[in-house]
Length: 195
Image 1 (tube, helix red, strand yellow):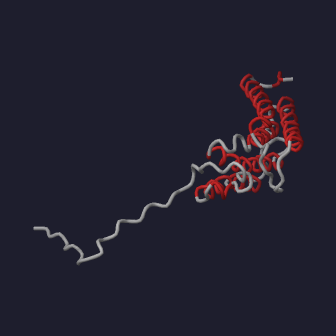
Image 2 (tube, helix red, strand yellow):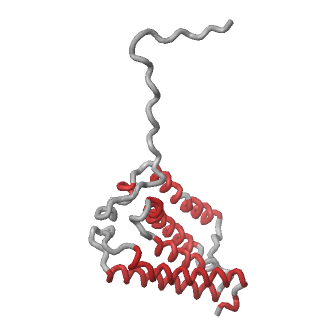
């Protein structure tokens, strides 16, 4: 099945397949269980399994499309969507960087999905309008990074940090200290004179 792929593409395909399998297998062990979903209900083993299987099915379809039509970018885009989606929430409470990734990955996965849908079947935009739209959509994760720079972790992840507490957001810009005040009493110092 991989005979149509060039050696470098074959290596990328194998790496993507292994990464998909590893992330899918790691889902119950490393994240989500005991957390709360967007609907404010705890994530259960059943719901996690359904989500994981659904995302993995997309990756398998992408891997098959990649091997059958190596000239099309649709297969790699579908695999990329799966890898980004499966990594969302990875070690959510372990570090602030992973917390930020868990939310950034949600934005990136939607960008990749939009790209795959709009550019089907060859994975490439066909008009200038499509290209401009995809460039605008690709800027959305950058806007989200700007939002993360001014929002504490609790604001980024108010739902899933409810139980374990949020690690510090490493992107957060802190206010700089106030400028030192002049002494409160007496006249200002005289200007220096040059001779």
